[in-house]
Image (cartoon, rainbow, N blue to C red):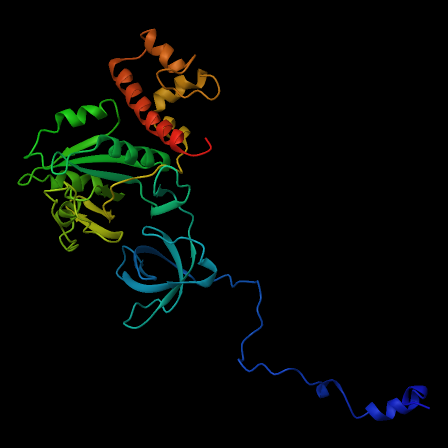
Length: 356
């Protein structure tokens, strides 16, 4: 007879055991079991991301108060697929004192009001996020040395309008060449223009336009963007370079995007300096956002057929018909021309995209 044949014998065998006798597998790392539940971080503090360097973020806390200070923070593991860029409002936990040797941790990003993006080229659908929460873009272009590229400025303007950011334009080196012919390319656009010469840099005028705004500076390498930033924010100490006399190209001097506080007689603002670029892809742009920036033309365009391109050869386009009937003012005609030029820039991009 086996021990299973008499259940009463089992009671005696196990009567000295209880739940405390159960042996569990030891946890040599003494870590807690994994869980998908993440802490709420209700104690997180909100700060402005000023810049990033090799995976470490500079964050400004208590902005505008007597306790204002910067700290260094890392990115939480759960944000490894979330881009964190200059201008972001980050939720920070951990050691937020900013003392030497301390490190906070970014655990979230506050919803952005705007996002300026670009792609490597027009066929690249991968977005490069440049800056978050900017409300102005200052395009810096030289009148000469290097020669101004209207098409590159067009692309900046398209990206700004797509992001809902107000564009501004600064033409430097006007002591070398007259920018009038170049500026005529932008007639009809709601675009404020500043001109700057070597000995006549309109620092106060430009600075007044920065007060109360977060302004991202963009421009081709060698146009004098870093020089302008240093004039507006003397403590910036951004590196400056020169233009190669053989190639006519500028040398990249700003290697990273960084936020700098502008302090003028009329108030403060934020200058966001970016590295110079020679191309600006529009693989991410929605053309409807371009039209929306031309408020009075967008109203007329409501009578256009669905899918209307609004280009000069577009059939039954309400904008073209209004122009032919003489219903647009001289300024309206100029703005229509500017709109069509920007839309043509986008259309050219679409034609270069495989599969379209």
